[in-house]
Image (cartoon, rainbow over all chains, first blue to last red; front, side):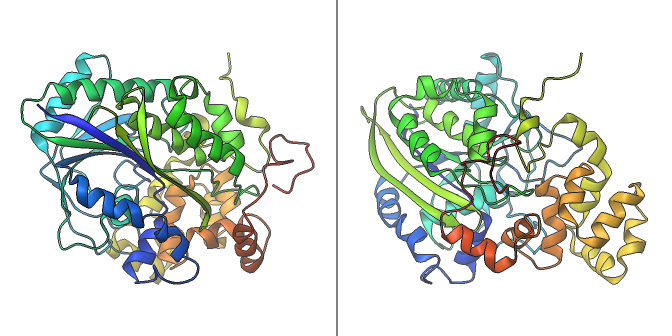
Length: 281
Length: 131
């Protein structure tokens, strides 16, 4: 039987990907960010998941204004790194897990979550930057990936509560899959940041630290936080944090916190990162 | 009845909601077209001619030519679409964000190194903040 063994969350700032690709990770500006993932790389080498369900948002790369699915799941064999305007990142092709992905889609749609099924999709920095942070620069990514894309570009994104509940439905689906697979779920994006307008550059460290703490220890209440609180307190792009609740919803109520990291800044953004394990795994 | 927009009183911020998305459809789709290298080349060779292929308003086209990102946002642009324009120019998100704040690149970068723009005074229009 497949099982969700752990979840993690991380920001997916595009400039982090550029720093990796251009060999700048040890420069003064970037070293503190990458140092925060040293433990994580060792941890994941040991955990060695078969599949990662990677919750991210497409940044007007595949989903433009023509199609805007609130939740989409990738059921393809593989996903190429996208050309976001400066050429594709020099990272390996992302291999999917079509069997588990299709199984999850069929299960959660019957649980009243209307996922859009995607069979062709390039993946942008929202997906590839977390892979680089966790795995570095391998020849091939060491696990399969099921992309779950969430609309956080056009307001309104799904509510935190809806995201949390989707996580629960995904977990139920995974546990009904017959193959013996170790599955992780990652929530990406955030933390506080605003990329637009005269308020650009907003960072709210108190909000972020509180969010990290409550995501671990009080997710049921955190899931009730309305959109306006994210936007006002954590910036127009800070609303990406709702995606972390999908990850948290897929884990046990009680988790073991293996790692917590927070750093300001990476470009315009506060970087946050958690590693949580299910207690019984 | 009009849609409730509880975010309308956040200072210095345009939320890309249904109304903005409708206004900005062609501006955003133009921006997205720059994800193809061939389109980038044509745009760079003659920006005006490339823009004229799109059913955008005169104001939207001028805002693109001026690289006035606040104006593009006001006319329905979304930053993740507009990112294709500044990426075509070889510029970063931090560069583009700084141009929207009235700060120099150096001042903006220093603000971020110092912990970013404070939330204090920047929650509601009319507060004393700098956003």
